[in-house]
Image (cartoon, rainbow, N blue to C red; front, side, top):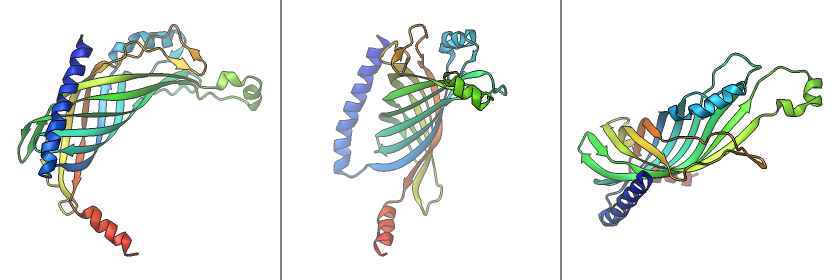
Amino acid sequence: MKNKLLLIATFLVFTAGLASAQTDSTVRMFKHGMAIYAEIGLLPNNRVIRDHLSRLQIKPFENVMASLVLARRTESDKWFSEGRIILMNSTNYTTDKDQKKAYLSGIGIGTDGGPKLVNTSRWNVTIPLGVDLMLYRMNIKSNANATLGQVVSNPSSFQAVKLFTGNVNLHGGIGVDYKMNVMPKINDKVYLSAKATYHQPLLGKRKWRGENVTISDLSYLKVNQVYIQIGAVFFPKPGRDKKWGGMHGGH
């Protein structure tokens, strides 16, 4: 039920945004910028996976999942939207090179957008709603020392195990932009931007898969949690691209 409600809310916001975009485009109110964010979330719901790995004498991935998010921002006075590329990674620190370790990472594309509840000369307050298509990988390996004879005689013992799973994640939350005057010769405006969003997988339980195999006894990855995102959005001055193009055209 929670998934359906969030999906309906996302659809309504984007439908309203499309209507607003058509109105705004007639008066050329859209601005475009590029953003870079750091996104951090905890993975407390994955204790079953971590305990399973520990029983197999594999050091589990950490509870912290960090992401680098690259986005293109489009906005008007009342609405905003972003296309996103997400690069996720969970660290795994250990000094024991002979111990097997599990590394969790992910890559995805997505979009979000929504209304601006507040838009002043200094602040935006937004309601971001969106969807991400994610692919996750768990890489189990060790950096053990071995002789060439050991590797040649038993190569499978030194090969990494790569498992994959995927999902479609809906998200919704609240965002705040603080507008700054940074490098005014280059940028029309710069935002210091922060968001807090709850992510909810849409496809339910997804099994881990390797090459020609499906893992039957490993718990599915649970990413339903709150993520905190902070970064900067840069809006270049209009005409800079034309000047740059003109410079290249003169050569």
